[in-house]
Length: 334
Ligand SMILES: [Zn+2]
Image (cartoon, rainbow, N blue to C red; front, top):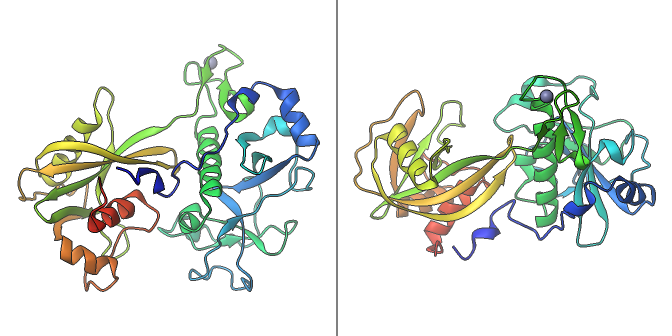
């Protein structure tokens, strides 16, 4: 697919400069020389510059468009380069690091908002500029520059892994961050552990001029998306597409081809967008997996994307499901 990398979180050409990860002196020089900027992450949410007039905190209609990068000597950044994740060197030549301040407890924190399908809350730290706040990445992913999107996705995924994999998988001892955040090493048995990326297939299953979409319980009313599922050990992408589609809907799939991939740091997946040709249209859903599945004609899906369908809402903008459906409608999957 020629436009494969135009997907949100598609590669921006960031130089990850992996050779510097085991060079603490070089990283310290970048940090102390001021030749770097830091992205703060709080519980998976990057620090963003709020649109002007954003005293209306949590107004879902006002979406931030840029990350906020701060200097390493800012008082909120405690510690040194050794406690940060090194993200790489951006096109401007500045080094980029990320620091997690998840221990900060905001006043009057609304825990329910953090767990909502769309978290529209913004947390403003009293010691950071007034026009900044921590914002859920899914809310802003489609607005960010390509480079900011890649950097934020990387930081979120790596810190998510540190939070969920703090102990050695071999012996259970608490492990230590190493390699500028790109490894954890066990002090007891010396095992090295690397950030995980879990493969997920997401499939554009078509039959004639119709596409198969489904919905899970708890989604916003009327929202349908492409079917998706984790790839299992010992399985190819093609087999995973056929198995997941059959398990969720009973639909049998013939030919499968790869279209595009998307890093999806919620918490640490890599989505493999595939096309699959259904062998028939009969649907038998597995209610343990999904709530509903339907075939939608190209004409009806165009109405959905115009926001004018009475019953069906499109998937979230920025998600690869939205990207694949949009390209299917535009006939640009080749
Ligand atoms: Zn160990």
